[in-house]
Each structure stands twice: as C-alpha cells, then as structure tokens.
Picture 1 (cartoon, rainbow, N blue to C red):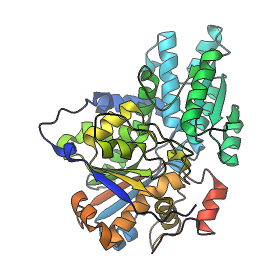
Picture 2: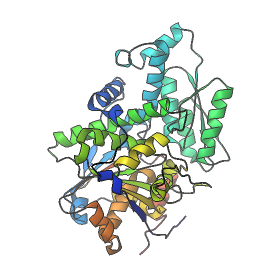
Picture 3: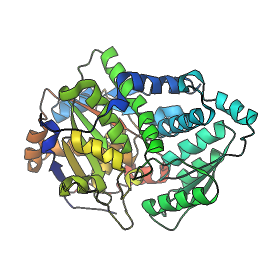
Picture 4: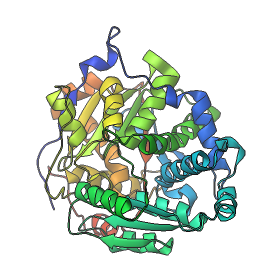
Length: 409
C-alpha cells in the first residue's frame, strides 16, 4: 500500500478575512461545552485523557512547544468516538422522556426506559470501527440493542471489539459511504434509531449532538494547557474523515478565541480527501470521493463530507492537506519511538497523521512555502489530538515492526 505521491495543500484565504460572514458556532460556546463535559463526568469511567508534552520533538523540529492529547485512554475504549455517541444518545433519550439533560445521569435513562416499557430500542449506525464501538457501548449501558455495519476490509479486531459491547456487527461488501446508506435503510425498515456521525440535508440534529459530544476533548485540552502554565496553542493540526471531529474542535477554538484562534490545518488521506476537494474546488458545492477509499487511515476513509462540519471548516480553517499513507505511518513511528525525555505514545494511523505531516513540512525544503504560509517558527506552540490507539493491532505492528508505508526519500 506504499504511496509515493506528494503531499498536496490548499490555503484558505477567507479564514482570516474581517468582512467575511461566517457560519455561527454558538453551539460550541463555553457554557454549552461545559454542559457536555458535565454529562461525560457522570460516567464512572470518566477522567480527562492525558496531554503529553514532547519537548524533545519540539526542539528537533524547531518549534517552541508540541503537545499530543492521547485519546487512546478514553473510557477504556482506545478511541475518542464514544464521547459523541454517548452524548447524542443521551440527548435523544432526554428529548424522548422530556427531561433536562443536566438533571439525569446517563444510567438513569435505563430506569426510565424500563418504567415506560421501552426495553427493546434498536440503535443503528455504520462505522469504520471506533464510532460503532462507542454506540454499542452506550446502547449496552442502557440495556438496549444495537446493530453496527462496517465497510469491506474492516479489521477483525475492530469487529470483535464492537461485538464485545453486545452489538451485532456486520461487515458489508461496500465502502464506508455506501455502508452509511445501508445502515440508514436498515434503521428505517426495522424501526431503529439511526445514530450517524455525519450530516446531510434533512439529517442534522443527531450529527450535531455527536459533534457537540466531541467538544469535551477541547475543553479538557485548554484546561490542561492552562494548568500547566502553557501559552494557548498557536497551531492545531486536526485530522478529518467526514469532518465532524475536526469541525467540533475548530468551532470550540473559534468561539473561544475569535480572531485570535490558533492557525488550523485540516489533514486527510489522499484516497479519501473529500474535505480537501471541497476546499480545492471552492465553488460553494460539496464534493465527494468515490471508490474503495483504500487507505491505512481507516478511521478517515470517508468519501462524503458532513455538510454541517464542512461549513465550519470552510469558514475557520486556514489550510487543508491531502496526505499519502506514508505520512500517517511516519507519525505512528515517531510517536512510538520518542526522543530522549519524551513519552511513548501508541497512536493509530488515523491519530498520528498530523504529527507525520508536521515533521515532513519542517524537515523538507520543498515545503518551505507552506511553512511560511502557516507561520510555523520557533515561537509556535503546536497541538495534536491522537484520536485512537492501536485499534487494529495487526496493522499497527505492520507499521512499527515491518516498516509498512516507508517515507520516500
């Protein structure tokens, strides 16, 4: 799966224009996000995930500071996605029973469903692995059923982990976007509750709740930086599949800091770069990628963008990158082989691509123009969010042990 094509990029001129009318991101205000985090605090498994400071890597790359937030520690599920799925299901249940979200712990919904005779709900979604596991976990906590559909080529470990949460998991002979459509139709036919982490015309409410759920990461991150006496980030590198995660974090920082928000780079695999294509065309339309979406970055292998997320990324992000698989593999190896004094971080392919990208941008003269446009220098404080651990242990070992997707010279 070696890919020697170059890294591509598009700069977003509208991101810093004073007179440009941007989409409003008030759903990610401090009060709203604090409420989301309070909801997550209600789980016994909750604790903030670690924020690692990598001083050795920062010195090597020539920046002031470099931090990686490690979502492999989230709720014991090895990935961040449960934050969105659990919050969306909580919001759905609160709406269903007419209760205030902040007044009812998640576990209490199980009692409400029993009292109402609603003990046979069915939650349905499609996933590359992590989102589905989060939905299965949340449904299981409520004593309800879940059916999860995965695209062809899904790692056996990801399927097994979903099944361990009590869900039925089915691998379909189709790509991710077609699996989403299949799951939607299945939910319609079986009176299921469709909980998908992407949006399109007519389906925005639940995806919006999922995006809000991810904002707990950003709230923890800013609190941790402040507690450590660090300056606010000057740069964020955010990976994107459909764009929900990246837009959530982007919206939080845009709402919190306004024009002083960090410079943000959105990073995708070159074989599933739907956000990049939207930015590249810049014609007001949503653009898709078709085909097998064959990339080691399985969590980002999505060809159709979340329309709500795209509007946020379009208006606030500074640059968009389309990256070959070797960029992600390099990032995984960098974090697994730390420089002296830095912690070892187990980061899966979808979680590490930003680190791999920064290393190449700062090491290779051919990307000098990009570095200048991003204003990356010795005063930069750069933040990454490793969204998953080794959710595919076999694939992870191929990268670390066998040198899968080597970096071209």
